[in-house]
Image 1 (tube, one colour):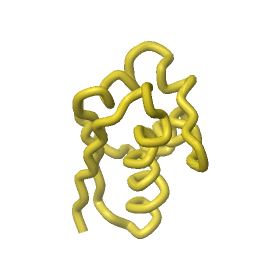
Image 2 (cartoon, rainbow, N blue to C red; image 1 turned 90 degrees about the vertical axis):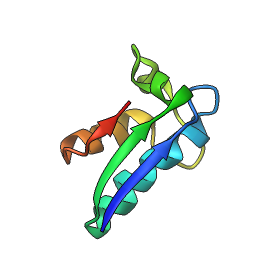
Image 3 (tube, rainbow, N blue to C red; image 1 turned 30 degrees about the vertical axis):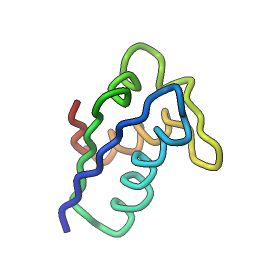
Length: 79
């Protein structure tokens, strides 16, 4: 199945911002879906500077780890 997951929250709410990344990295990839991630609005700030390195949501892996897994699996990320 092909999946496009949208992220719209940014650094102001790290938990909410991490959920779409977590869905793709630890959900879609694990079950074999052909997935992509779209960073829209405030979510685009996650890839500016070192923002992703400092974002950690509650109960979810840190954004830096989620992005590393997406990169490792060559998941397209659109901004």
